[in-house]
Length: 83
Image 1 (tube, rainbow, N blue to C red):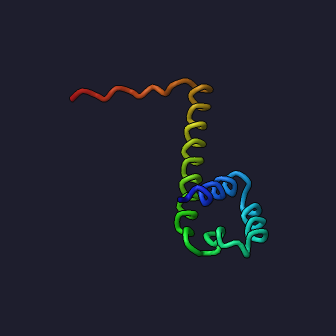
Image 2: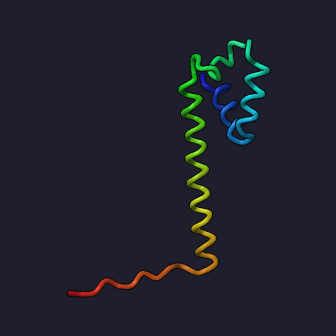
């Protein structure tokens, strides 16, 4: 069950690397948080952080595109010339 790992990754994504350092300091002797130190579940933790970052970039890109469309309208693509 990766629910703890996913929750920590979500919080780290939202609050930044400093938050991860705080958790590491507080939970350094807690075996449930071994994934933060390369232990079991570490790969899943890294994967989850990566997924969150990718989703954030996609949302950001879509938001920029929507803003451009709202400011300038839908771009018109010229018709292809007939041969």
